[in-house]
Image 1 (cartoon, rainbow, N blue to C red):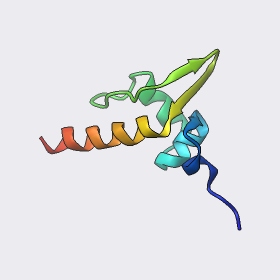
Image 2: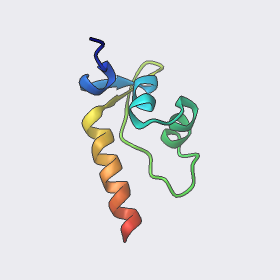
Image 3: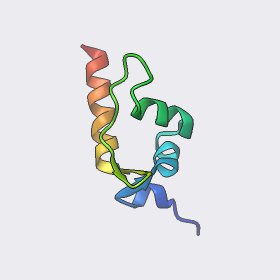
Length: 71
């Protein structure tokens, strides 16, 4: 039985995070770099050129974005 590794790992690459959010890698990169108006970038950390994101940060970012849209 295949496992959904991007949903299980606490730290994801940009590609894994995009798949988790069901958006393109390019769009997530644009969001992170502040190129999408009205969308606050999620918290990330960089290891050299790699962008890494904790799953809990993405979950919190989505929840805060949702709450901000309601207000």
